[in-house]
Length: 395
Image (cartoon, rainbow, N blue to C red):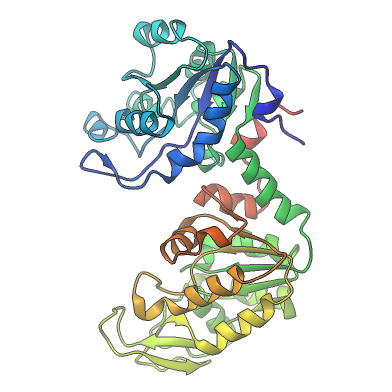
């Protein structure tokens, strides 16, 4: 189904509820990275330009007890948003009630208001996280239309996305629309050849993604810690490397199903300890008994670079090694460079650690799209229906 976008809504003079993803990292009450606030700006600015009254809400962290509220207020977000928009942003430290309702009713066209962390509603019976119908209906009553721009929570049915959308005409914000088009489009209607690169520690985290992409991609390249569960399935010695014993049989099935499509590393950077301070070695295939594989090796970087040549669609999710340690970052750097150097290709990073790696390594601008949602991107790549997307009004 094609979903409505914010440009399909009549916004002039309307109270526009916007579910944003302001789940930003905080330290001692200060925001340490404002990427998610920046990502929401195009939608907010468009509503302001159209004469809408912007009412923003988001979760921030997990809140289960009164003590958890400490350091989880959206006030710093409202202050940062005010700086970025170069205009006053009203902050109401409530999630419901007369104070909030009066402030919303007093808004003029182009005004911006942020209300308190939606997860504060989880203290009394997880009303937000369990999509309490009364709460969803109440929040919907505060506005005339609803714009969902929080892809990061699209894989969850919460009162602040599905609950509100069930009671109000809704549309995707620009960020949500981009995610639907890029990730959904890449998986469902890719330009070919379509190459998927999957890394990370565990096969169990990526089973659904691997299975779905084996049926859709032309090649699926495997890296990261899960390499060694596949090695074990093939009877290759893995030394002290990470292995999921209970997933070896599944890995064997995926190898059989994938055939030539599934490409495994051919060498590893190893070390006797999970540490950046111990000596490293490079081994083809089998890992010695006293070593553990912590990154793909130079021959694998070369192989993966070759497999990527000519690709028209590339989706990458998960690092190739323990990229936080400099000795085991070269695989992730190599893959990042190989994708960044492709010409005439749609290149997508599916959130999480691979997105962090691309940003940290300075390659962010060289990708077509970097997803803002870790868990949501993974479930989208698995081909699952995301409740936060499904609940948006169809065109």
